[in-house]
Amino acid sequence: MIEQLRQNVTGPVLTPEDEGFAAELAGFRLNAEHSPEVVVGITSTSDAAAVVAAANQAGTPIRVLATGHGPLHVTEGVVITTSRLNGVTVDPATKIAHIEAGCRWGEVVAAAAEHGLAPITGASATVGCVGMLLGGGLGPLARTFGVASDWVRGFELVTGAGEVVTANATEHPDLFWALRGGKGGFGVVTSVDVELVELTTLYGGSVFFDAPEIDSVVRTWIDWTTTLPEAATTSAIILRLPPLPFIPEPLRGKNVVSVRFAYVGDAADGEKLFAPIRAAGAVLIDMLGEMPAANIAQIHNDPTEPTLSWDRGVMLDELDADFADAFLGAVGPDQQVPLVAVELRHLGGAVSRDVPEGSAVGGRGGAYTLFMVGAPDPSLFETVLPAVAGQVLGSVQKWTSAENAINLADGFAIPGSYEASWPAETRARLDEVRATYDPERRFPYGPVS
Image (cartoon, rainbow, N blue to C red; front, side, top):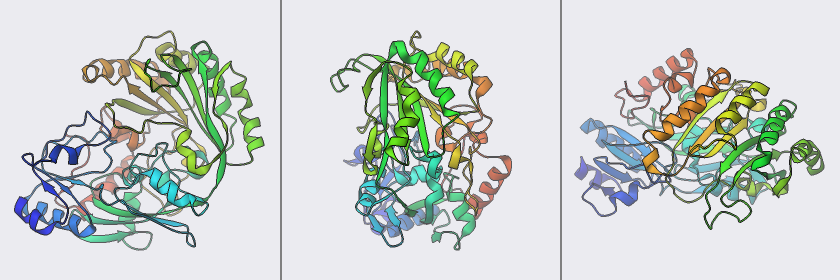
């Protein structure tokens, strides 16, 4: 198989004995160590098709690695890397961005901004577009515009059967339905077409409060979210920040809470809408105001450099004062827990409505998400952090939704998270689509039985 790949693929074909093998597999998660039989850096759809053909002949499984933000851990078969497919083109007349498989959201945001347009993106500029879109995708504008995959207008992919196909509303509509939210097990997506929105500015950013204000701010935020219009999307995050030089001095070594906010509308209206949060406590840092839509990643200010990482996430139902008691009792300022970030994100609004033609996106009924990021210490990853996360989840079990979003569950670390990501009938339909387009399960997906 290796020689066949080297003869038919333009990009690099590397085995563990080759220089550059580890570098080709390196992604955003530094603790994701892969050891496949071979890694292939594709440069075109033709390369992808050649890999699938060789793997089918050899009976070898294939996984796809883009930016490496996800929890993928590969110990067999072939890995396809897509970083060399990094082109973005924007047609301002149709408002369509053509995005190759290795692109990150920041690249698309910048390209769209040149035309007064914006994608419905994720929170981080460095997250890969395709991986997020395949799982739906919840971003800073979600309540206003829905999940990111609602704006996909077509995919190009090489299926597990080795066919190069276009999937959209009229061509292979069953596959198009599945790719918008079904996540994996269909093939390798080489490009995607996404519709953009007309958006040049918004009222957004984040406001930080010191530890003594955490209780008041979290409780106020929970009550406040019940009154917000769909034009507003928000999250609240408790941060335990290390005393390191790259942390801004007012936050360095502190336990703080930050409220993130994005309002699509007049800045004066946005400021008025946010007033109850500013009044909830003494503000430590205020970074909220009218901003270019091109700067949307500044709302969450997620890390941009590769890092050791560990996380867990679930969806929540409607919250109340009892939830605030349980949540703050588990992760509030008086608790000593090895979690650098614990986020509550408000959903509802446009997230809750499927596209007219339907999609496989699950979790639309969730009211909030809860997402935890552990301290970047690998010695804690196996036992300590899972135990701590289990305690936190146990404390809020009463409010945990029966639904989930697959981008939260990917990795399936929480038992039942895969099954909760779609209703039974959606899972069954996804299985049928996978069987049609990847009959030999060349692209294995789902929890290991």
